[in-house]
Amino acid sequence: MLRRALRICPRLSNGFGSFFASSTHSSRPFSAPSEVQNSSPPIHHSEDPNQPTETLQSTSKISIDRSGLYNPPEHSHEPCPDSELVKHLKGIIKFRGGPISVAEYMEEVLTNPKAGFYINRDVFGAQGDFITSPEVSQMFGEMIGVWVMCLWEQMGQPDKVNLVELGPGRGTLMADLLRGASKFEKFTKSLNIHMVECSPALQKLQYSALKCADEDTTSDDGGQRTVTKLAGATVSWHATLEQVPTGLPTIIIGHEFYDALPVHQFQRASRGWCEKMVDVAENSQFRFVLSPQPTPATLYLMERCKWAATEDSAKLDHIEVCPKAMELTHEIANRISSDGGGALIIDYGLNGIVSASLQAIRKHKFVEILDDPGTADLSAYVDFAAIRHSAEEASDDVSVHGPMTQSQFLGSLGINFRVEALLQNCTDEQAESLRTGYWQLVGDGEAPFWEGPDQKTPIGMGTRYLVMAIVNKKQGVPAPFE
Ligand SMILES: C[S@@+](CC[C@H](N)C(=O)[O-])C[C@H]1O[C@@H](n2cnc3c(N)ncnc32)[C@H](O)[C@@H]1O
Image (cartoon, rainbow, N blue to C red; front, side, top):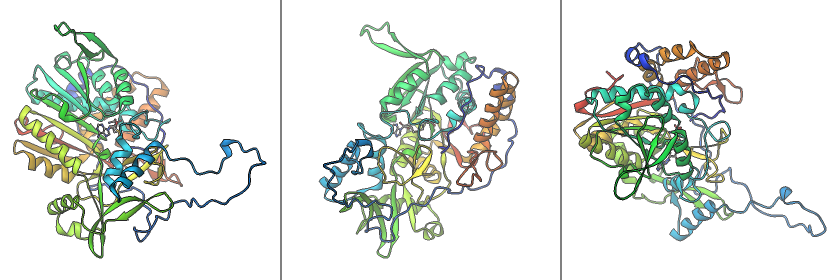
């Protein structure tokens, strides 16, 4: 996700018609470095993780007699009362009689059904906390649409296909994909759309982004179905991928979904690898501590290190492991193996073991991970090498392709042709937005957009984001990984 408020390009002309036929094998316009640098900020914790972190605020109170003063509440210096989520987290720690893993903390903070960060509100865009590629430009969803249609072609144009999106946010990517594909009726008619989304608030936004309507079915049970007016396809919502019906060829898209899955953090100590945990200090603030002995999650660390070259893990003092990413990848690979189709995973990450990358973002700024949980997004770099291993371990019937950079991926699918086509028929203001969006999606350092205190760090997403495909081997090699 991008940390700055960005101008959003208004959606331009529907459908990419002849563009689709001519663009999929175009040359890519940008070269990309072989490795994405971890540019997340350092996590500030004390040297001894058993001590309260340096960043914690003191809550000691000075007693002053204010009885004669008028003290309006907005100027109160009393510490804020704990939010429902903070009370809940403290309750878990108290009930367990000890700290919880960073993974459990992250999962509660993001998706607690009552007060999780994603659950009750729209967190995207200039007014929210961060911005993602589909919100930057319509071209992103359109290019994913090109990929999906290419795969559908390779699958032999099945009459019915499950199109699944994991964590669709505002629904913008799917809406742009469907608008772009609207002229390809055989394709749009084949779609059963499945949105895997845990947030009721975001489900509502997705419903309206897809211009959905509920229709009575002709079945005896008098049931209803939801249909998107963008494509005439049915849409349904599920809390997990497991709940999406099996038995049809399936295409899965996961954009910035894996980075929200909870990670365990490990730190090398004199007594060996210890898990970083979240505890409540005597001053009632959250703090990091290290487990005194190996935790059950250490098994995942061992598993992950088995896949890495010894030299890679030997030089690290911190390692992150995401068991949920491994489980999800197993599920994706097994589903694709039995039903046919493929998955596209796009996220920021590394093609290798990830060190300490967990970060918190509130209102487009990095904040402390333990500060006011539930009011900031938490995300971690995605370990694409672990995804590859998990998929290959799950099934011999699937092949894994990439990762390649977002810049390579979008360039090879023809985003430069698409931007040129859109620029033919737009206002000056729209043209500026289109160019801005284009560079934000593919730029890697030459982009004219800057962040940081000195505004000198380029923020193009073209190389920071990686793209990987997992497909049933029957489908051959997917575009543009040939
Ligand atoms: C970082 S946002 C990305 C949104 C969208 N893909 C985009 O790029 O704009 C993560 C999305 O995944 C959803 N999500 C996060 N964890 C989830 C989980 N465990 N199960 C289902 N949805 C989840 C969030 O509600 C949100 O829609």
